[in-house]
Length: 277
Image 1 (cartoon, rainbow, N blue to C red):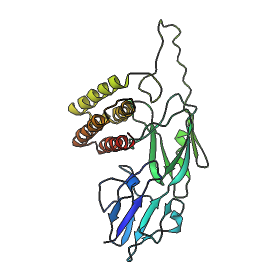
Image 2 (cartoon, rainbow, N blue to C red):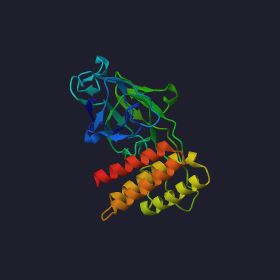
Image 3 (cartoon, rainbow, N blue to C red):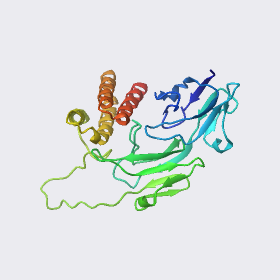
Image 4 (spheres, helix red, strand yellow):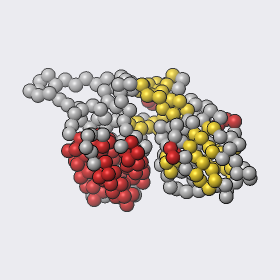
């Protein structure tokens, strides 16, 4: 059985698994080797996604793929398949909050700058902004590199070439009749809150949702919990090992509650925090 090396180190999402070979996600940033029989295979990077392209392993144990995949793959005729992805520019500078790429465990993308993302062609990418809500904005990246956004999102998102701009909707808040100010909470990058207290609150909330059989409501708190622990991990003197253990423990509880996507996101965040810090 030929050994094929998979390299996703240039992508913003580095984890992957190969359907039919294993359901275990691997970290492609370490160039793992996968033993594959000669044949055709797909590759998935996020829970629930379907493979959007195929590659082959020849009888000689070499990588082969169609010319239509040349835009985002490299390694034809070798034993290493490199996923270069498609260059996508994200512009959320008109927003009052940051954006988090769903189901990845990555840190939020700041609204203060433009971000260049290398993404593989796939359907169902999405962003999350507020804890406790189920974001329904999705976009696809085609094998031709085109960004596809459904027409129902035209009011706040637009595409120009490979640039995705999310403007949001303007909302005016009139608190002139109050005797106090207002802080926008539970929005990535949109408010000021003690991250340690917030993480503890979210930890209790997640456990409670699981306990009362409402695990279907854990997507938003999961993303916010990860963001809070990321902030804690970056603080001077942080006990990174303990934070990683907390993420892995919560991942196990979510998996037991049949929430594999949230469990996977927690695991990926733990690996990322451990790698960075």
